[in-house]
Image (tube, rainbow, N blue to C red):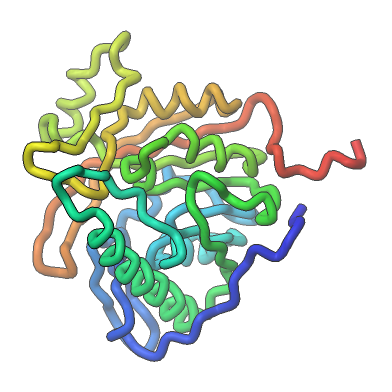
Amino acid sequence: MQTDNVFVNAKEVLGLEECDFYHTMDLPEIGIVHGLFDLRSTVSLYLGNFEFKQKRVLEIGTASGFICFSMERAGAEVVAYDLSPEFSWDMVPYARLDVAALLEERKSHIGRLNNSFWFAHKKLQSRAKVVYGTVYQIPAGIGPVDVSIANSVLLHVRDPFLALQQAASLTKETIIVTDALDRGKPTDWKAQLRNLVPDQSSIMRFAPSYRNGSPTETWWYLTPQLIQECLGVLGFEESVVSYHEHLYTDRGTVHINVPMFTIVATRTVGRPNSLDLSAS
């Protein structure tokens, strides 16, 4: 049950020049706008072929909103959750870099990402609601949801377990996590799977390197098995993993197939902390 007004008002965005698009999408009256990822032909795989009809969904990290709008078309009621310029990106704090300057640059980019969402939201006549905040403190005022989505989020946060715990606190039925396979390993994701050792597969690799000061926005590469264990701890003990590739386009100029995995995890024990229990 919603407990306070955490939802923001729609923002008027006048043109594409105010926007940075994360996703490539087709917009009425505009045509194709190019982003970093083109999921138009693979979004069902990206979401684990889940059936969203009549589900209330919390999408964590909506960016330009392509996945949000796709779930809406599939019959979902979506709450899109993301950073705004009021909140700092979880930047890797390299001692040799001017992290404060990087954060200011990132805030500008976040604002333009927010603009791309609202621009597409209006063009597509979306009814999705929006809340801004961090993954570490998702407002209970959103209320309980049937499904939570964390797509390409966990690798970018310092504490991925806390992010999952926050999502679980609102989620009645299902959590869907999509993330990148470790690009430091063979590019063939099938080979990666063959190389996983069962008793060592619940692992995460620290991505930053102090020697070259990068990446600045990626913390971890997590194995699917690790995420399954985390979700199991949080009460989502039944899960299915699928593997797939998606097109990284760099706004239409570079084409790389990025290997990814999706976990669809079902709650088997416990209940969301956000439920109103006063009547029970």
